Image (tube, rainbow, N blue to C red):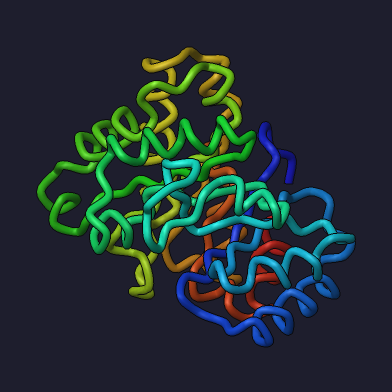
Length: 254
């Protein structure tokens, strides 16, 4: 598949996998994906598995991501993880603003923007998530919600920082539900988000930014989704927890 931007497919393992299970998974992925060069492959295990997974993928084409990060560099922030701690394990990417953290940890657009700046300050790359709920979509609010989240969550980033930021469009109603946005719905949302980036930054920056789709991505729908002009990859949840299904999503996207 000849894309303007290199695809990036990341597996968000959420609160799953012991260290032993994590190692089994990445060993399987290394075997399945050893020859894939057309896609940037990222795995995002829980914090407890970062050290061992980092060692396991050291000589591979798989990169390491974190599921979140503190906006602070150190200090009295119980339970938080700082950029310097992540860099010890060769983490390259950090997921920010996932809908679950927006809902359960009450993360605001303003906090996510602060975290995005901290991620860039540490020379890491944020994957910033945005997406509407079912009620918002059915109420005709999708574009308003997306523009508010995109503008708020990226506030303060420079053009250079934005060009090195990945976005993930994850309609909340499609996460873990088995429902997937149609290819037309996904493309429309991605194109709209890119249009917001043109207004915030410029056309050149907007063309460089990779926008992933997330929400019940699986091997059977990967090819059609990735073939859309503004869909530049996937942020995969459940299907990333098994080596064969995650590998098949990647292979079907090429």
